[in-house]
Image (cartoon, rainbow, N blue to C red; front, side, top):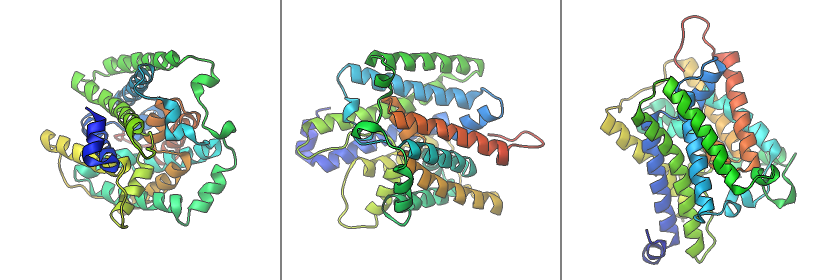
Amino acid sequence: MDIVQLVDRFGEGPTATLFGLIAGGLFGVAAQRSAFCLRAAAVEVARGQLGARLAVWLLCFSTALVWVQAAELSGLMRSGDARIMAVPGSWSGAIAGGLLFGIGMVLARGCAGRLLVLAATGNLRSVVSGLIFAVVGQMSLHGWLAPLRDRIAALWVTAGGRNSDLLREMGLPREGGLGIGLVIAVLALYLARRNRISFRKLVFGAGVGFAVAVGWVLTFGLSQVAFDPVQVQSLTFTGPSANTLMFFLERPALLQFDIGLVPGVFLGAFAAAWIGGDLRLQGFESEVNMRKAMIGAALMGFGGMLAGGCSIGAGVTGASIFAGTAWLALFSMWLGAMATDYLLDRPTGAARPV
């Protein structure tokens, strides 16, 4: 793909949107077919299981680390140019936002990315929850909740005017990131074999992580040839969901990577569900579930914006370039999700699906 020719023909904004559409489409297909979900993996661990959902999540996470670090070593991207690394990170935001996001995704029965994938298959619960997530995310970015988010984020920030690079902090070379990814991949494959996960599901699970690397490489390549500054970024859903919502509500609208990402995920997941025969309308099971889902979506909207990303944006995309606050946010999401399942959602009688 010649990025220069694309920019000359379509312009920088439309090209960025196209790249978002490509990365989002790959994610949508892979996530729908693999049932990738951090909430389900965290619930498994909280209930003392090392099952298939954990194996799929670890495979996605490790694949993102391996592909992104390999791209960095080969010169296809520079993590130092990424938006998440080029600005100060918030340790306090990562902790508080990660905990809120983890609580919210258990209540809503899916993280932001999972809700978008489920919405594409006809899940009306996810449609409602996703809209609430996007609205609260926008309120947290520019609206009534923005001052509260700013105050919490300012309590404890990274030093030096940039985010923390964990590899540098640990004194490891760039090859160390690739090695860490390979170790986690071995663990994921071990759990996959123990849980008898099919080869097809493993391929799609790895595809989720690969989509993250594609986003990084494409936006970095565009930043090297564009006349105007281009943000080097990849998959995340808190900011893009809010930006996509406002794209259809405001004029003039600015084309960028985010605007292609959300529709790309929806279209990819819809196509995968259609081919796989998984399209079906589903609603809320009860009023209690509806209230929990709405509260959970709101918590994810605020928590994701405070943490600097959702379970994909911080938990996989940010972690793949070893941004310090992203790893802390991911750890906090796991804690919040596991504690919430233990306190509020753990089955007392017959076993429940996760």
